[in-house]
Image (cartoon, rainbow, N blue to C red; front, side, top):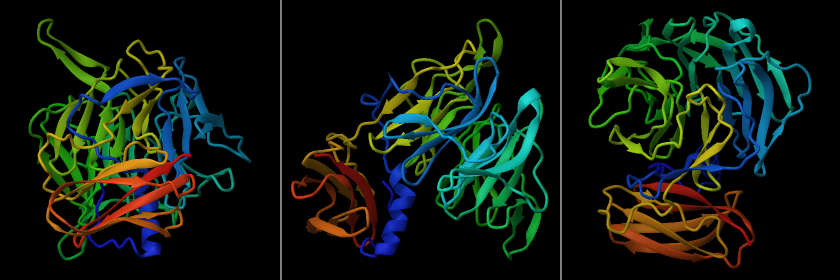
Length: 449
């Protein structure tokens, strides 16, 4: 659940901007693991490792580059649409073959690719953009200084329209901790510097630890690195306003150091899947790295980890994304422990009904995903209120127009269940918005007749 205290569902322009930014990731993962399982599914996905994936605002998923188990590199582009993968026939030039590059999506739906490892183990620092509307790649001419050539760099485009590139690898065992910001408006990189309390920039603000092959995630003005680094017990996050790094001590159970994991953001945290996990064997006095099958969830609010169901096999250099239509996480490709390619797509099914009936009433506002979803013509919506007060639950169409108010009035704190019959509506994608005096939240549902 995502809530914005200052958001007004009745404002059409604000409503549409909000929907675009959150609808693809709007799911809450719960603590109970009994309904959370990994299962293989048949899908004609390209088989590779070290590739990148981004999800466009219209739901299409793009996959670029990577390598096969013979270390042959790719520079092809595939799209997942209407439940099948197809190679995109490009107009014009394409980027050179590469793997383990940084890729991100800008607000105009352009996909950017930076760096990576190319043919003959050449480190790269070129920058390319792909425009889905024009179906064309462009090699960008960068003004000013370029970051060092690297692979395994971490990257994120924040809601503040700033792209942060962090760390990476420049040799077999030489890792980086420098931080760069990229502006697509000026096609320029800047070495990130800390800002002091009176607004002056200071010395370069490197990460406290070398970073390679980790995902980056933005929440409440901070960029999180979901990793407990080797030999440590802490995590790091970057305040995007002050540019200052914050070290937080991990409490409770935590995952082992496992770079090259597949990571995906859910509404209230991060799911970390597999990776090149560090292990020790006290009996045989050995240590090293191996393909991990563990799945962990990092909760933004409590900043704690909880272990979820294991993958059926160890995987590293895979990718993952959240399938919003079917409310599940999907993992693609990656290398297995024997250095052969994973040729299956694994899905992580999350309990769609939210908190169990026996769970305690939450202390915060929560709008749950409807179930079933998709539905025809009836569905159930649960929401939770931390405090008693006036509420309104409204359905909107894709253009942000109000369709129907399905619940309204004074409600006590706790759980509330709404049964909704959409018999009068046409098939399609709709949104439902819950408003109280203090909170707002939106989710998507699909009516299939």
